[in-house]
Image 1 (spheres, rainbow, N blue to C red):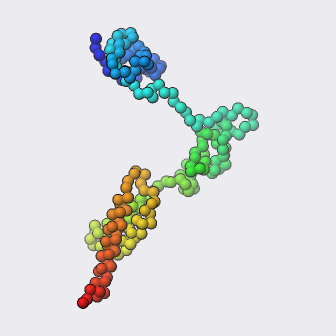
Image 2: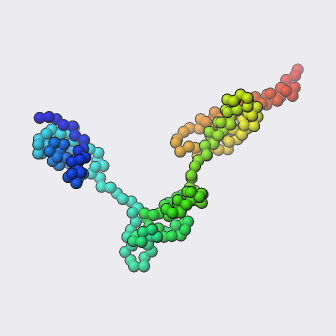
Image 3: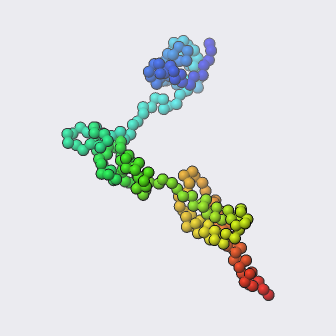
Length: 212
């Protein structure tokens, strides 16, 4: 008797209209007590040796959260967008009543989908972050680019203090959404500090500070 390693015959499942796994040969339903067992188990119909492995989520019923309650009492406030659902709070932007489904919570303030979209496109909602300035990259570029382009090395007289200021001022500012370290700040501070020291030594030397 052939041995079959069985994951999930999705086509057979759709035909049966159920989430219960089926035998890949005879399409008979497989009892749950034989699922995810190490040893081979014969099919109850065709007796084919099966090893059934499925994720537990297959048998977990989907949970729908925040779908909104149905308004059952006459005269009860209803959602502006869903007339059959009970209103739970007003929108902070336009004042329209919203159900739990339409409520968009943003840092403790509640907006309807329309106001949220308007705030996104026109910048009316201050707490809605549309972009993030990468100050660590700016500081690093100010410190490095004038040195990379040698003909602009003299620009470090201005860019080095700017890089040092930005790195220190925005040290704790939110960085990229993609997690990364503060290595850019560190490199910018070190290079900018060296450039400032070099300028200080150069100015001191030109002023005759090293004369005997």
